[in-house]
Image 1 (cartoon, helix red, strand yellow):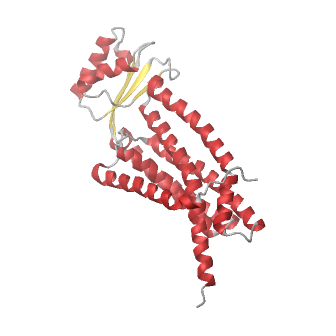
Image 2 (cartoon, helix red, strand yellow; image 1 turned 45 degrees about the vertical axis):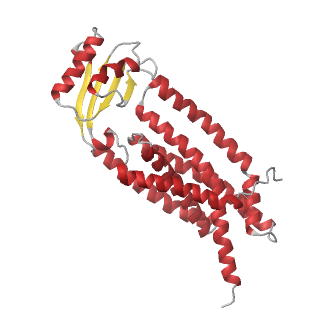
Image 3 (cartoon, helix red, strand yellow; image 1 turned 135 degrees about the vertical axis):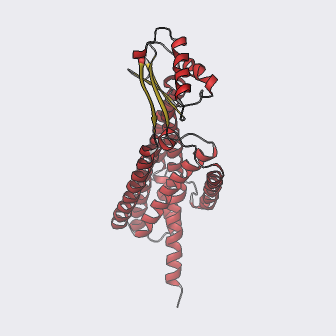
Length: 306
């Protein structure tokens, strides 16, 4: 029995407008400034130092501040993410004299440091990021083809198109927001986008499955009404799953921001947060109503005499 009676079909056009505005703003930001690519994509310098137990990330940033590096990604290592005694610093390309000055500054801040505590000082290229991007796009393409085949066989071709467009919507929303707010991205960002695609399609398939069941037993009702009832019937599950996931992701985001200090993981958790919200939104407001719109237009064309 339907617990809700929210007219989602009625809000379809508004949802399209909201999504269009966000994605358009992202496209403008992309063409204006591009994505804020991190060291995995641009190359740079990695410093891996052993500082000793009990150091704080703010202390590391204070040492880096005179070199205009206080905002670079940092990662705690050498143990767990709270009590590790090592730090990995990912900075733009640094010349040898600057690297030595930074290391000297750290040794002055932590007098117990020796040359043996300088675990790694390397300039790295952007090859890994480029390869990962190509492999991610290939994986995304193969996954899209597989989903189109699966959804077409289980439901129908229009269902698969609606699902793929909803997934692309989620990916573009994440990219748009990261581009607008200039959030730095590294390889974990790609993993987050691929994860969201897998998460979002699950919600969409559940709604599609309910639509298919209701189409069989409510044949006399208009398609729009059947779709609306189907979304309302699955709404409790959809929201419950999303809220549970969001609670975990919010905890991770807070931990990565205030306790752990891993910049890459901050972007990863932020992308997942945005993706889960966007995925829930697109499953409810876009995927099902989009299919209903296409199906209704197709039926009207079939009824129109030649």
